[in-house]
Length: 482
Image (cartoon, rainbow, N blue to C red; front, side, top):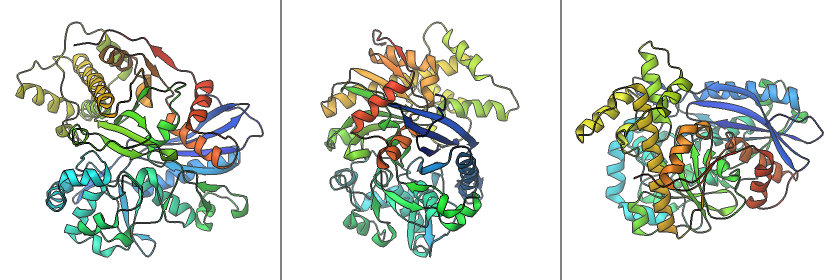
């Protein structure tokens, strides 16, 4: 979408993904939402001798530069920040104690065992409703406790809340991201003090909770100075669905009920939207999570490894000094004839960074399955494996929730991958609607615009606005592949 000049107020969406970040500016005018990109920057974790960390100061610097440009060009009314989930900074006296770890760091292995020895998995699920993931904040905090780091802290801030704190001086936790920590009650969406006490996480470390749409305050003088803004003239910072998937689901352009979604990027978050959580034992064993959405909705979903499988394969080839033309590779993958082996895209063996093609080949050999002989065939294998994981997940979501899925919306970067969208339509036997690519930024902007009175209504109203404003491509339903 192109930016449309006019009098409507400008809202900056800071959208941080696990491989890149961007600053987008959106406006709501003439019953449409428009969006323009101002800045895009890389986000790469850094491996040191003590583990894998996020370059959070570099991200903040890039964010400030992008916001300064956005304010110069558009005159911002508000800023909203979203990012990936679970990772955090330990704080003391308002200062960050250490560089945050990446969720892909393997330090939580012993912590998972320690926590589940105290609170069995079924009890944890009843309390927080979360899919078991070894990097959930709860397990990371247990690892910090074991290392002695936690006792040095007087607070924690999830990453989007840390950046908002540096902008405003206001330390809070927005509920959608807080729901991914494992410490938020699945029913009341408040911090579970009893659970925190059982796993030896002092509840005073957990910041006050706010909902998406809460105005956090004006820019702190230090942040305003870094951005070259005179404080009285600067924007306010507004809490949005700070878990990027929560913002993305706001902008699913669904005009009818009965939709499933795939928020497709580094991870693929696959599920349905519900009014109430599903906490059955079958749901737990199937790996479904009940995360908080905007307006009290439940994001009932399963985390699938996502396009990480493809991007890490490309990185492996490029590290070997080879140039990879991804568009040409995807075109070649579409021309691959005959069956290719599929693998379990949920297997935790694919979680860490490293030689992804070798890891996939090893997985297949261990099960006596043919290994793709060309890069194009390997890419086809990755995308078919993802498409079948999406289909499997959506069928399970229907069965467990009772919510019938009639159409699949793929939003995010993966919506541009024509082969993946087509394979998903084949695997699910359902029509696939692809787009918008920048769903997360759109959802971020719309929550801000609604909080400041530029648009009204419920999520369905916001989604109808997205549907009127953004081009999408529909892939017709096909017979489900075996």
